[in-house]
Image (cartoon, one colour):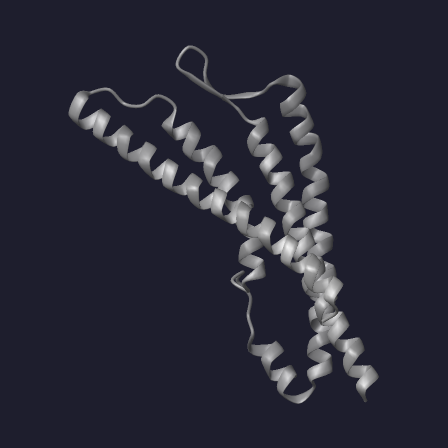
Length: 176
């Protein structure tokens, strides 16, 4: 791979790793919060207000914080039976399949991003909250923003993965 490509890849991977770490810390925080709620409810008859709301918002945030790293590490669910069969016989066809997959995946993630922008704007402008007034309320715009950031991070990882395969295909064609 060219040096400029590897430099971009390192920078993007660092950002993706940071988002993943933030998602992991959010998991630990939610775990502590749920335990505090259970202990408070059982031992002191004093549950922590807003735990169900915080958990439901956090699950969405965690997914979008960690999806780019999941893709980067090759851990997204997909079947390898047919691609491996094709690669054993026609390696370049497999590379073309990966490029088509990357373009299709990028298009899908871009659609999710575009559909999420108005939802973020609406939550921001209207200052939409989750919860019950007087008991617990939390703004939902941070989660909507995390969805946008996660989509962009995933989109960049997909683009880099697809570009990597395309560069390998081009370099292989040149060496023949």
